[in-house]
Amino acid sequence: MHEMSIALSVVDAITARAREEQAEKVTAIELVAGKLSGVEIESLKFCFSAAVRGTIMEDAELMVTVPLSEGLCEVCGERFAVDGYYTQCPSCGSYKVRIVSGKELSIRSITLE
Image 1 (cartoon, helix red, strand yellow):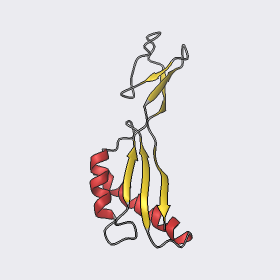
Image 2 (spheres, helix red, strand yellow):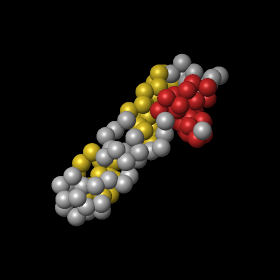
Image 3 (cartoon, one colour):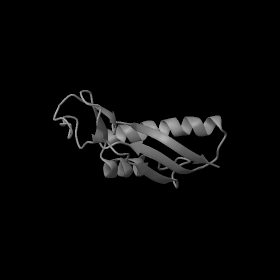
């Protein structure tokens, strides 16, 4: 379950930022996790709830935004929604499709007090 290591890394990063800002509490955290990032959102939320116990973000609201996954056909230039890495362009039928969004995993914002 790599979601626990991701949750622990997020906690470490936010803790470091909170220290820099001399914050006493983290009240909200927003993550971005694309459908193609390989992260199971519910597992990440569960692991995160365990990882924040006893920290300044224990009561923080966790929001996870899942952006649209998109591909770009390198043959005809069509941009379209994708469900996986290997997909066919709906316009020209080519499999030369580059994933342009949906793989991201990042901390979008944190709210400190």
